[in-house]
Image (cartoon, rainbow, N blue to C red; front, side, top):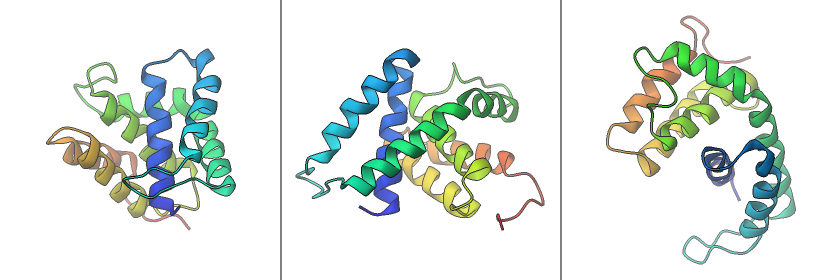
Amino acid sequence: MGRREQREQIFKLLFRVEFNDLEEMPRQRDLFLDEIKLPVEEEGLAAGEKDLSYIAEKYGKIQEKLPEIDCLINEKTEGWSLGRMGKVEVTVLRLGAYEILFDQDVPDSVAINEAVELAKRYGQDNSGSFVNAVLAKILRPGQGEKQ
Protein backbone atom coordinates (compact mmCIF):
# COMPACT_ATOMS: atom_id res chain seq x y z
CA MET A 1 0.00 0.00 0.00
CA GLY A 2 1.44 3.36 -1.03
CA ARG A 3 1.35 6.64 0.88
CA ARG A 4 -1.71 7.85 -1.02
CA GLU A 5 -3.65 4.72 -0.05
CA GLN A 6 -2.43 4.97 3.55
CA ARG A 7 -3.53 8.61 3.67
CA GLU A 8 -6.95 7.65 2.33
CA GLN A 9 -7.30 5.00 5.04
CA ILE A 10 -6.28 7.55 7.70
CA PHE A 11 -8.95 9.89 6.29
CA LYS A 12 -11.57 7.14 6.55
CA LEU A 13 -10.59 6.33 10.13
CA LEU A 14 -10.47 10.00 11.11
CA PHE A 15 -13.92 10.47 9.55
CA ARG A 16 -15.32 8.19 12.27
CA VAL A 17 -14.51 10.89 14.85
CA GLU A 18 -17.51 12.78 13.48
CA PHE A 19 -19.89 9.97 14.44
CA ASN A 20 -18.43 8.54 17.64
CA ASP A 21 -17.52 9.80 21.09
CA LEU A 22 -13.79 10.08 21.65
CA GLU A 23 -14.04 7.37 24.31
CA GLU A 24 -15.36 5.01 21.62
CA MET A 25 -12.59 5.77 19.13
CA PRO A 26 -10.04 3.19 20.38
CA ARG A 27 -12.62 0.48 19.67
CA GLN A 28 -13.50 2.10 16.34
CA ARG A 29 -9.79 2.23 15.44
CA ASP A 30 -9.38 -1.47 16.20
CA LEU A 31 -12.48 -2.40 14.18
CA PHE A 32 -11.30 -0.27 11.26
CA LEU A 33 -7.81 -1.78 11.25
CA ASP A 34 -9.29 -5.29 11.33
CA GLU A 35 -11.47 -4.40 8.34
CA ILE A 36 -8.61 -3.15 6.17
CA LYS A 37 -6.47 -6.22 6.85
CA LEU A 38 -8.74 -8.00 4.38
CA PRO A 39 -8.23 -7.34 0.66
CA VAL A 40 -10.58 -4.78 -0.83
CA GLU A 41 -11.79 -6.63 -3.91
CA GLU A 42 -12.56 -3.70 -6.16
CA GLU A 43 -9.26 -1.98 -5.42
CA GLY A 44 -7.07 -5.01 -4.75
CA LEU A 45 -5.73 -3.39 -1.58
CA ALA A 46 -4.90 -5.13 1.63
CA ALA A 47 -3.06 -3.50 4.50
CA GLY A 48 0.06 -5.23 5.74
CA GLU A 49 1.42 -4.92 9.27
CA LYS A 50 3.60 -1.92 8.34
CA ASP A 51 0.59 -0.20 6.79
CA LEU A 52 -1.58 -0.89 9.83
CA SER A 53 1.10 0.40 12.16
CA TYR A 54 1.62 3.57 10.11
CA ILE A 55 -2.13 4.25 9.87
CA ALA A 56 -2.73 3.68 13.59
CA GLU A 57 0.27 5.77 14.62
CA LYS A 58 -0.52 8.72 12.38
CA TYR A 59 -4.21 8.63 13.33
CA GLY A 60 -3.20 8.71 17.02
CA LYS A 61 -0.93 11.70 16.47
CA ILE A 62 -3.69 13.56 14.62
CA GLN A 63 -6.24 12.77 17.32
CA GLU A 64 -3.88 14.17 19.99
CA LYS A 65 -3.66 17.45 18.07
CA LEU A 66 -7.37 17.75 17.20
CA PRO A 67 -8.18 20.57 19.65
CA GLU A 68 -5.27 22.64 18.35
CA ILE A 69 -6.03 21.82 14.70
CA ASP A 70 -9.74 22.57 15.11
CA CYS A 71 -8.98 25.91 16.73
CA LEU A 72 -6.68 26.86 13.86
CA ILE A 73 -9.21 25.80 11.20
CA ASN A 74 -11.87 27.92 12.92
CA GLU A 75 -9.48 30.89 12.93
CA LYS A 76 -8.70 30.54 9.21
CA THR A 77 -12.27 30.06 7.98
CA GLU A 78 -13.95 33.43 8.18
CA GLY A 79 -17.70 33.10 8.42
CA TRP A 80 -17.49 29.33 8.85
CA SER A 81 -17.16 27.08 11.86
CA LEU A 82 -16.50 23.37 12.00
CA GLY A 83 -20.17 22.83 12.81
CA ARG A 84 -21.25 24.50 9.56
CA MET A 85 -18.83 22.58 7.35
CA GLY A 86 -19.47 19.21 5.81
CA LYS A 87 -18.01 16.28 7.71
CA VAL A 88 -15.85 15.29 4.74
CA GLU A 89 -14.37 18.77 4.50
CA VAL A 90 -13.69 18.92 8.24
CA THR A 91 -11.93 15.57 8.15
CA VAL A 92 -9.85 16.47 5.10
CA LEU A 93 -8.89 19.81 6.63
CA ARG A 94 -7.84 18.11 9.87
CA LEU A 95 -5.62 15.66 7.99
CA GLY A 96 -4.14 18.32 5.72
CA ALA A 97 -3.53 20.77 8.56
CA TYR A 98 -1.82 18.07 10.60
CA GLU A 99 0.48 17.19 7.71
CA ILE A 100 1.36 20.84 7.08
CA LEU A 101 1.98 21.73 10.71
CA PHE A 102 3.31 18.59 12.33
CA ASP A 103 4.42 15.95 9.79
CA GLN A 104 7.94 16.73 8.66
CA ASP A 105 7.93 13.77 6.24
CA VAL A 106 5.21 15.28 4.05
CA PRO A 107 6.05 18.35 1.95
CA ASP A 108 3.45 21.09 2.30
CA SER A 109 2.59 21.04 -1.39
CA VAL A 110 1.94 17.29 -1.22
CA ALA A 111 -0.22 17.70 1.88
CA ILE A 112 -2.37 20.32 0.16
CA ASN A 113 -2.59 18.44 -3.14
CA GLU A 114 -3.55 15.16 -1.47
CA ALA A 115 -6.14 16.92 0.71
CA VAL A 116 -7.69 18.57 -2.34
CA GLU A 117 -7.85 15.20 -4.13
CA LEU A 118 -9.56 13.58 -1.13
CA ALA A 119 -12.02 16.47 -0.97
CA LYS A 120 -12.82 16.13 -4.67
CA ARG A 121 -13.28 12.38 -4.35
CA TYR A 122 -15.41 12.30 -1.20
CA GLY A 123 -16.80 15.81 -0.86
CA GLN A 124 -19.20 18.06 -2.68
CA ASP A 125 -18.62 19.93 -5.94
CA ASN A 126 -16.70 22.87 -4.42
CA SER A 127 -14.95 20.92 -1.67
CA GLY A 128 -11.58 20.85 -3.43
CA SER A 129 -11.51 24.63 -3.82
CA PHE A 130 -12.65 25.19 -0.25
CA VAL A 131 -10.02 22.83 1.19
CA ASN A 132 -7.31 24.38 -0.98
CA ALA A 133 -8.19 27.90 0.19
CA VAL A 134 -8.26 27.00 3.89
CA LEU A 135 -5.03 25.01 3.80
CA ALA A 136 -3.33 27.83 1.88
CA LYS A 137 -4.23 30.13 4.79
CA ILE A 138 -2.84 27.60 7.27
CA LEU A 139 0.38 27.49 5.28
CA ARG A 140 1.59 30.85 6.50
CA PRO A 141 2.60 33.34 3.81
CA GLY A 142 6.31 33.14 3.15
CA GLN A 143 6.61 29.88 5.06
CA GLY A 144 7.40 27.84 1.97
CA GLU A 145 8.19 24.14 2.10
CA LYS A 146 9.39 22.37 5.23
CA GLN A 147 13.08 21.78 5.46
